[in-house]
Length: 255
Image 1 (cartoon, rainbow, N blue to C red):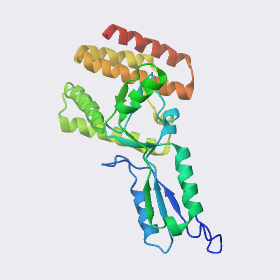
Image 2: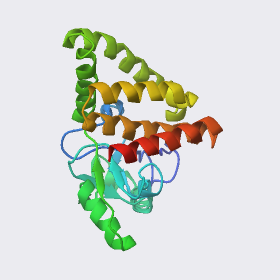
Image 3: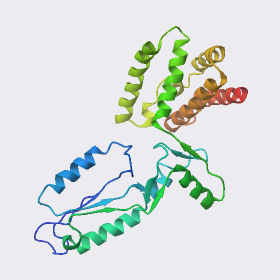
Image 4: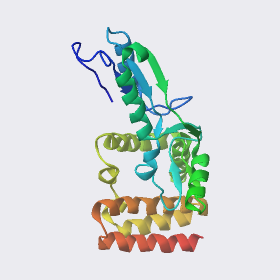
């Protein structure tokens, strides 16, 4: 949020400038370097400024961080972050602008009213909803673990680790590039986007012949999630529903 008045306007708000940014306490996990660039530029200018620093908006719990499968899924590790309501940010911004630079110029305001990690949030949701809400915490190392599983499968095909990385990294990089400019639904390709039952059956047979049940369970969990993404784009298409039922049967068989 940026709000700036012209020099000839009311003295209460002349030059008052407010930047709202999203950040994390401690180590930063999201690419917000451009926020730093903007702030440094403004601080070095002749403008009178005040920065408001909200962290994670509580309203996210109803949108991007809404419950998934009855669980609170958090993809930023297990560090605590600051939570604040959007209405509180608006109230502070209004007061800063109304009182003007005489009071607030040159100040940074950090606005975390609650410092909670994923387990804390899940506990608060459990209390509010009167049912157990588990926390599912995703970390960067989880991707490394998935890559390790994939390389292990390639090793059983006769490839070494470096050869496996050579095969996998371009696929990972192309997926990341797609995600930069597309939605999750648009970025999903392959077996589950097509609802390709025959390919799934061949993959499952290969897994059962060569991998332990833990890897097969991981594969089936990811298959089911991929189908949920495909459904968001294509709806209840017959091929997707048929493949989803087969995945659920396979999950029951594995246990």
